[in-house]
Image 1 (spheres, rainbow, N blue to C red):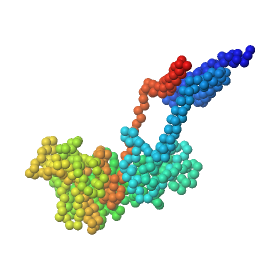
Image 2: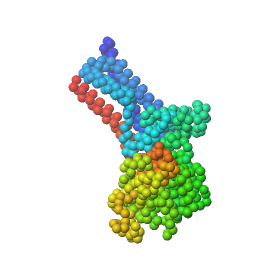
Image 3: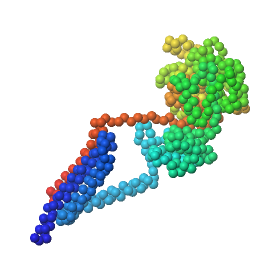
Image 4: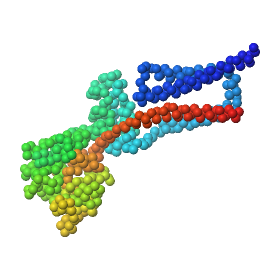
Length: 532
């Protein structure tokens, strides 16, 4: 038997190797399907390493089969390499190398010039404007040390801190420390537990309990406002409750102020003197008038440089009855801001004519960054200002549209038939809020003819909560904190696809698409083989 005959006899077994490769390829597809079912939770193997061994066994069988085919029938491989297929193959290799080079070059350029695009509907991968403002207002560089052990997933925290760094213009850096491997660093930082972040700005330090945008922004704001200023809310006259949550309460404003490092306290002027640490006093929706002694105490407090925020609802919604509003008389006579006895009707309000809507803001630190953000004042009263008060600088802050008016006939509102009387009622634009400042005593006053706009039920409506926080920031002489309130966290929920849809997605991605590619390749190879 000559050499060619021996080669011919051996080549007959080459198809066994090719068959082994095809079977191994099919087995590999089956293993991938099982892997997908395992990931989807539809299949749990008794031996967790079985699928992994089967995967590598299929790959090994595929490679061994190809090698056996090449060794048993080298002439067919030679014909393939020197025939038309080889020419087509060389063209494909050149095209593949060119494509690979382009991809590599594009990735290198992208790495050297990073740019992010957030295509999510609610921009969940983009920092909120409040966070950007906080970063832009950092007076000194901030360093964050994230304490994450190997048992605590740090991927999302790392991505979030990187977004802070990219948007900080070089004023924010971060590092990760494993507290298990470096317990001394955690002890020196005063950090206990896992997943916490220490923020440092100069000598000031703040510990952030969790790696969320809201918590980190709160930490920035506390760094900017390290002194805990006391804000007192008056009680005893039926004012809004800052302790017990509810639709008519003020717990949301308390939480917002505490996140900015303010201390929120309660003050009853009938039983207590005004504390020396009172930076701002807030009167939110009294239902009975303040006593003469309480107003005298507030006057002395303001004369010594204190600040008052007065939020008074229309008299029709209080229990004043025929009693005089002593505070309103004091504000009008001493500070030049008068609370009118009416209810604002706004026919251009997008929700209800009884919801007076902020249409125009005058220039002032309180309203400077409100921009086009609206504020709705449900059942508000109008204000008037006087220019005859000496040593007081008064600013009219917020106006309605010209379509609004101050309705003085409360019976028409009860009948739900308010109508403008040009002879007796004030036409729009209506003044809804005003500020006053005494440059000699440095006392500050802000008056708004409504308290309902900032209740828990209305706090998150457009700019309602932002306005009251801005008012208190200005009253506390913390203008640098205005518009630095932390963003509200977005609540998201994952809706899992149905089992049928999940299985279709699994089969399509793991089976149909790869098989279609393989079938297309086989069909192309057969067609070219027929053509010679």
